Image (cartoon, rainbow, N blue to C red; front, side):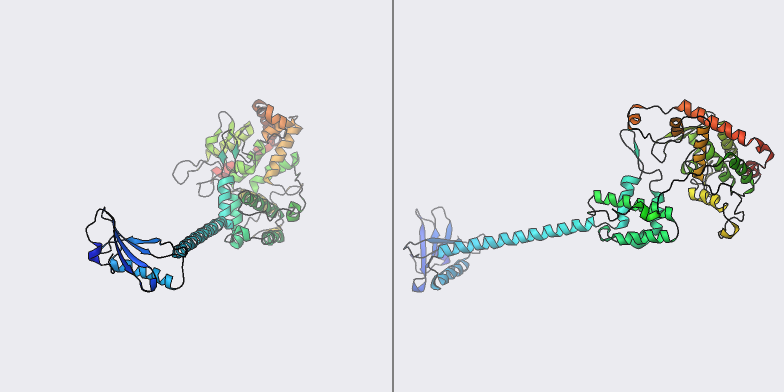
Amino acid sequence: MATQITDKGMQAKPGADDTWLAQPFKRGAGVFMGRITPTGERLFYFRYSDPDGKRPFLPIGPYHPKGKGGLTLAEAYAKACELSGMLQSGIKDLKAHLERERLAAIAIQEAEIAERNRAKSAAAALAEAQARRLTLEQLFQQWQRAELTPKLLADGTRIGRKDGGAWVKQSFDRRVFPRLGHLAVADIKRADLLEILDEVKTEGKLRTATVLYADMRQMLRFAVEREVIPFNPLDGIKRSKIGGKATERKRVLSDEELRLLWNAVPNARMHPRSAAAIWLVLATATRVGEAMGARWDDIDLAAQTWHLPTTKNQRDHTVSLSAFAVERLRELAAVREAGPDGKPSPWVFPNTSRDNAVCIKSFGKQLADRQRTAGQRLANRTKLTDSLALPGGKWTAHDLRRTAATMMARLGISTDVIDECLNHKLQSRVAKVYVHDRRLADQARAFEALGDKLDELFAARECEDNVYTLYASR
């Protein structure tokens, strides 16, 4: 064996057996060795004597004169020097020591990988948590898409709200979003919500406060179901604490009041279509929103029917039009105006732009403004503040629907038929399962009887100013 390994020696031709080259270190601190196998492999080793008297070989690496795919002689010798230095430092079992270092390095590497994975998981969890921290306005958008937008289920059941939540959004835009819309739902406290409701109550708008409370609570229940928040902050707050004790309106216009109203409407300076709406709601017992949203495509004057494909309870409804109702609609059809596209407006009660239905609030305000005292008159509103006031007190468009139902009952119409005329959902579970007849023939007789009664009450109408003639002459 040579006493010093050279590049020339490592590049010697292979023999029939392994060729070994050795270069001892001083003080017996190991031997740097080169090996040439019969197949031409050239490898470096470090050999030393362990405490048991054995002479293990520690592989250093393959040889390459330029270090391409292996170690140069200088690089291999440097590593051998490191191993020799360990021996000189007092490490006797070099192989066991290197194994322990290898395992420690693996452990450190695994710990680093685990830490990186934990960091990634924590970052992902944080990102998920941030994604779940919807703002109140974002929550409303999800709620509107999922539950307020009208949808037809596979079994034919309609869900959602007729207006797709437009009215609720208008209310939230005005009272909720300016203060809480940008906040994360999880950060909103019960006190924040009650503060808004208390302000509405302070304005004296108890009904508005009650409706706003119900909508907020429903939206927050939606958030709980989707694990956006752990609980509903409005749970435990009774409705009576918001808008006071619930009381059902019982206002029904008497026959005499209806006669007075018939004579008062032409002189109340209402928009003629609004005047017609009073009598149409009374003759059809429809909800005011359904009446204001009526479309000509859904009305068949020849067949005397009005189909409402979408209603408040998501149950379609067909109204049999009495002669009295048909007369009102024919007068409106005669003065039907064109929409923005130049075609006749599709709405029975169009707004001023004639591109959509009139707002139901507009109709309600016209009625309310004409049932005030002179001192209660609102700025820029009608001066005829008591032109529609009646002896029985204030009345609303919904009271006309109640009056129509009461008149039907007085005419001997059965309660179940009246419920169908009003398009009420069946309350009996048995009826829901077994009764699938809408009693259309009975409804038609009920509506006709109501129309005849109205004709009888208003028999002297030809002596009064005709509001529709006035409209046509404008």
